[in-house]
Length: 289
Image (spheres, rainbow, N blue to C red):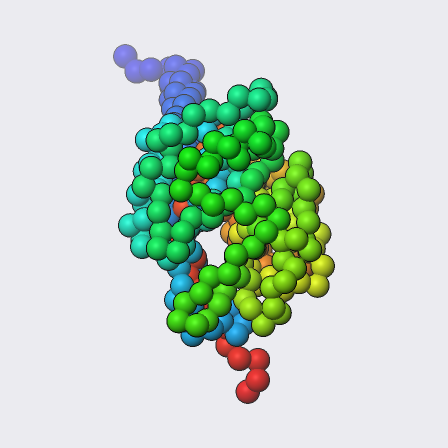
């Protein structure tokens, strides 16, 4: 006895229902449990005008938005550090949001083991992010004195190699800090290429005066965390929408590279994997021909 047309239609409906359920369930598992722990090493080359010969091929490793201990473990941070150190960067920078009190203030977590192994030949430097300041800026500063990270707060340092110079500057967070471009960049000769650390990428749009900045390194946006093809990012914490969501962007003042961060505050990522970055500086082609 053959099945009736209605039973065959019911069977097809059931198959479709189960198929859609499996697709949705698989997507939720991937978004909530797989991609947030699928760390990506991003390599990018940045051309710099008049880059001194000693800094040709200079490699900067970038980590951003750790947000410890929110949705992140010491082991996960160590994995990111190991991935970056394997690339043998000359310098490592951490562009803010070291800690996250998840709405609470005043209690900075112990980070004794968090930054173990975070070393580079020319040092490790960082800037504060909005979550660090909201938690307890002074407490974060005190805690990080036990780490290998040198914080630059509206300040700069000059890196020297074989007589050539590269400036590394840092400006305070745009949201909760007090950015002072004159303190961060004043005194750097205009002939010296400058890398600027600024947690919030909007700094590249709002400007820092007439000072020279060749590339700004930022985080803050987490890449939007969720990216829908043909639609875009679910949410980007920027005054300029998705412009500064991730990657290399040209702002009104200068270029900025936006790291997608390590932590996933929403417990989810889709097509926006957590990232560590290896930036290689190279001389820009001469404008004269």
